[in-house]
Length: 186
Picture (tube, rainbow, N blue to C red):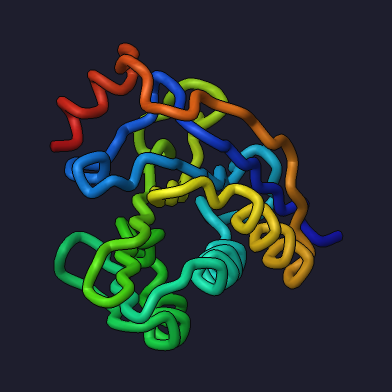
């Protein structure tokens, strides 16, 4: 039997949303998040490499950009989606984690920042608990295009979308989890 691959979508913010430094200053005020559901999968690994790669590929197609830069731990970077798609899944199993962030630029200007929230490392509250969450920050609401991209990624690899959750359209006052997380993961 194949595993049940599930993602959940969040349009907006929660009081636990760890907003990356500088995002709001750049005008990237809209947030669309993809929660990789650790409870909706029978996979043995902490996360599904094929699912993450499909989501990132489809999301990248939805973003008008001419520069792509993915990074993990500020040391390992990939200057293109093609390089990332080829090299990231081939990394040693002990080293592979979802990218920390992806910068998308058009004509030298940051148009989107993907920042991964590593809730799998600290638990966290619902709906994020124990997940890897890919948060995309943009200047305008791209939720329709992003939801369409997620549906395409899911269809491609046999995954499904669980919940579509509406959060606050603007960042909300930090809750306890966000304040603790910001102190722990500086």
